[in-house]
Image (cartoon, rainbow, N blue to C red):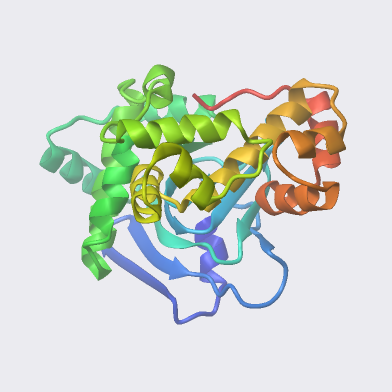
Length: 306
């Protein structure tokens, strides 16, 4: 799907490699200038093919025929194995990262060698079953594992970074199928986050309806702006302001799906002074208006991937 989309893009910021048999890698950065904020990605794909997106910038949102939209944003990872259950795919105009496109048949020997090098055995049937159970695509949320992957990638460039993604993709499939990334694991707080940063995060989640500023948080928790910004970005992978917007939009989505609150009430409950501000932010994140999202949630049942 993304492979076909990127092959049709004309840009000097898209670089393909096929150094490993059956596996194509693409380091890319879309042009953020001009046009709509979201770009439609044609839903198509070849049988027995697998894609892994290491999202280093922007956001990708998938809407299937059976579940609510699922989004991954930088730094995050999206896995695709079957596009038949996907209705729409939208990406932000600034999407960028590394894409792996794997032909499972042609890459059979390559995958064997990679597994041997990593000292693991990958059960391909488990991979198929795991992906099928998730409608053919899986978004890996923020964990200590994903943060470690992207931190390492900052030190790698060119072919080295792309080869690293190939190895980590195989490792990820192994971890998923072995149950390492079960629901309990993914809900736990990641390691290495300072207690004060966790307290700030919890406070923000509990006060989403209130106006928050860097200065207010610094005074309340007796930290400097530099400490707050650097530690928060290190812990959660995005600037604190971006994280706050994400949490407000996600909470708004939950209220749309689980309560009878009006959209105005929901907007105020998640810290927006007007419906128009909430509408713009929500549509920019999920690709549809809050009212449209609510109508969709009334006709299909939402369930998490994990």
